[in-house]
Every structure is written in C-alpha cells, then in structure tokens.
Amino acid sequence: MADNLLYLTELIGLRVYDLKKRTIGRLRDAALVPLIHPSRIDRFLVGGGWAWLSIRHDQVESISLDGIQLRDERLTPYHSDEYLLRLSRDLLDQQIIDVHGRKVVRVTDVTFEIRRADDHDELHVLEVDVGVRSMFRRLVQGVLPPRWVRKLQERIPPNSIPWEFCNIVESDPQRRLRLNISTRALEEMHPADLADIVEELSPEDREAIFEQMDSEAAAEALSEVDRDIQASILESLDSEKAADIVEEMSPDEAADVLAELEEETSEEILREMETEPKAEVRELLEFKEDTAGGLMNTEYVAVPASATVSDALAALRGNEELLESLNAILLVDEDERLAGVVPLARVLIAAPGAPLHELVTEPLIKVSVEESQDRVIELFDKYNLLTLPVVDENNRLAGVITADDIISVLRQS
Image (cartoon, rainbow, N blue to C red; front, side, top):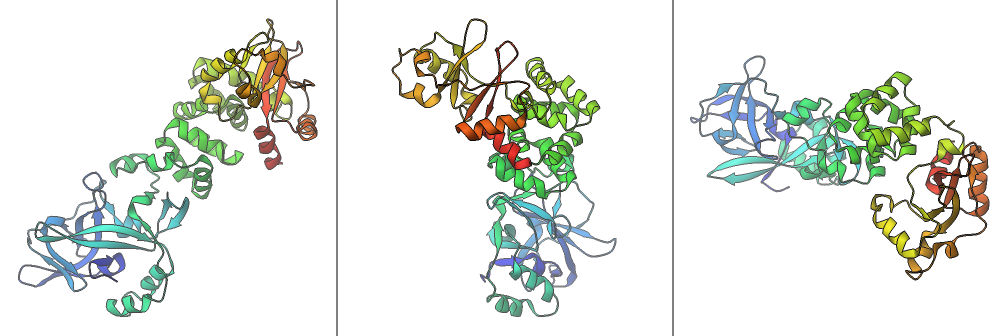
C-alpha cells in the first residue's frame, strides 16, 4: 500500500489539528463539489452533533494516517449544500453503475490519492472499492490500528473501479444536475448492456436516468428491457419526455409498448407525439397483438418493380437509419401491391443497371395482416426467412416482419 493512498474508512475519524497542534475534533465526512472539480475533495467536515465545522481543501496543510494538519484555522459552521456530494453519507453503501464493467455494484469503501499542490496536501478520489478487501477493512475499522489492517489485507485481492468509470445513481433529477452527474457514459453503452443495468435498478432510479438521457439512446435501451419494465418506465415519465422516447423507437416496438399501458396514459403520450410517427403507431395499434399486423414493422425500403440496382442503392442511401436491420428490398407496382422481394446481398453484388425484378426470390412468400402469429413463426422456420412481407386484403404492402421480431416473440413465450 503506497504512502500516498488513503481509504475512506481510515479518513473518517481522523483527528484534525489547528496551527498549534491542538485537536479541533474528528473528521466526520468529506465532500466533492463536482461542478468545481470531479475528483478533488473540496470540503472536510469535522465535529459532531449539531456543531459541525467546514474545512476548505486549501485550508489543509497535510493529510496522513496520523491526522489532518490545518494551515488556516478560520473555520465556518457547516450548512447542508445540495451541490456537495458527501462520500460517507451519499456514496458509501450506495449502488453505483460501473460503466466499464457494465454492472450495478454497491460501494463498500473509497480509495483516495494524497497529492501535493501549491505547498499543501489535496485529497483526490481515485477508486471506488467493492470487494472483500474493503469489507474486511470495514469489519475491523476501529478494532485494529490502520497500519495493521493494511498489512493483513495484502492477502486479499483488491476489487475496485476507477472513479472515472463510476456513474452515481441519484433518483432526484434536479440533484443529478446540481451534482453534475452526466448520463453520457450510459448513452455510449450497448443498449443490451444498459438494459441489463436498468433492470437491476429501483423504479425511482430508472425514472431519473431515463428523464436525463438522450431520447434516441433511451429508446434503444427501452427496446431491450422486459415489457413490464418498459411500461413502468414510460408511466413514470412525464408524457412529453415519454413521447420523445417513443418517437425514436421503431413503429412496431412503439405500438407494442404503448399497448401495455393504461389507455389513458397511452393516449397522453400519443397526443404529444409528432404527426407522422403518431399515425404509424396508431395504425399498428389497430391490429391484434398475436397477428401478422400486430408483429409487423412499417419501416422498410420499397422501390418500383421497374427499378434497377442503381435505384435500389439510391433508396438505401436515403434510408441509412434502417441499414442495421435491413436485409431485403421490396418491389411494388404502381398501386403499391407487392411484386417481389430482393435479398440485399443480391443487390450489393449485381451490376448497377441490372433490373431488380430479375433478382427476386422465388416463390414469393407473404402473409395477410390477419394471419396468426403461430403461422408466421411456422413460415420463418420452414423457409429460413429473414424478412416476411405483410399485405392487406388488396395485396398492398402494409409492413414487414423480420427474424428479430420472431426472436423477440419466442423469448417472451
């Protein structure tokens, strides 16, 4: 253990000395002001009962296991400040998100680094400790001298998370802002990993995170969580924020999650949505959930039956947001009736001037919007489909069902 490292369990209870080496009191807590500095301890709180004093970081001369020596003893009474993140009160024993390890953990101790700056010591948060070693320190705190504890713990492997990978779980959205707690690191995670984390949190913590997140990232994560949790999250948000998130979802996913809500809540969200996505979602809500119409998505790429490969590539460039889930181009006649399906792989290797109708798969497999979910699953299994077009009673293209949709159905059954 390096001499310039200190644990929160060692820090709390340290004696604080004035300029004449007299004891002022014992340290009760230490606090960050994240808006000023993300890792440097800004305030030390000393005293007890109702007589707590506040020590600024620049009033400290030195910090060690032997105590905290002041260089300026003009202290002020401590007053609660919503911009302070108190480590003992607000972090110790609390859940945080490890954005690097993609999991929720509980803090059992904090490791600081003592740094010399402008001829005095500063304390910086280095890591959050979550393993057995920190639990051992907590158990023997005050029972054995700190230097003995340090020696004994060497046999136990450390388990800690660098401070920059920690995202604090704060259920009050206003306090998240005051503490400068950003959701940027969460937004950069894979939606499936973020969904796993969300499912471990309390309803209040989920609400706070989704309230602050970018709507697109929130929509991607929401699509990955269980249906009952999806509904719970949307119900907890105000209708405007919920609408922003639902608009970023694919129409079929949006319709599925709105169908899980109370009708009044669903209508409130729909009223806040923009006209075009709202119309698509309303149309899908008309279909029964266990039919092809209830499964289908209205986001696809369709071109005229007379189109060429060049036309298809141009259509793809105009729909870049669909490329991740797209695996076929659909052909329609002048009346929007389905005329064929062309696998995307065939488009990519064909000559630019090749007519698309020469690349269609045979036979053309399609289903009606009223077809049962069981029959749809049977067709995907029998023909190893990736995309299945859905048509109305006049054979006009209504939407598509993809293999991903079927996997989601099978997971929920």
